[in-house]
Image (cartoon, rainbow, N blue to C red; front, side, top):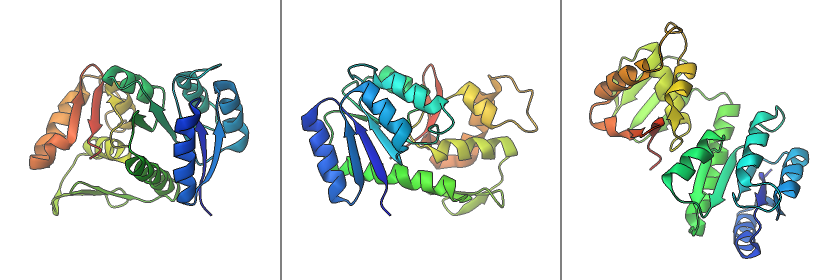
Length: 227
């Protein structure tokens, strides 16, 4: 069964392009043109994915995302923000509100569809309990605690391994140092936030030529390169 996608977009021309092309791919697509209606629809429909504009009448997209990510029944629904706000600060705010992906207008249809499918696959992978992530020459096996870079196995500490898994599971999403500290808790439960930088430096050194795949997001923290 194909996924159900809810598009919350007040510009009909854009909504028409998105819904038409997603339906061509076999998706069940629903559309809402205002914030309040979109939020209510998401809460009742419980779609597999929400494509969300930011500048909406009634309730803006950031508020909708925050509400969806705070409620137990909707918090796992992936949210793709589709907006004309293309500044890096806007993107960071979107991710900090819980967005799973961020696409700026104007956009190209085929890359958008590709990202929709990639996001749905990522969610499916998480839900299926898959324990292996592979991207850009890096493969990490969570079940066996094995990490390979360009085919070479490298020993990582438990903290480094958890950090790399967290970053790779959502490529392109900036993680604050505090978020990485929380996801990396274990033997380092009393670590200070600034020690995340030390772990990242150590991890990058072990990644060798692939070190640039972990980008520093100024004023926020780190992210794994999407492309």
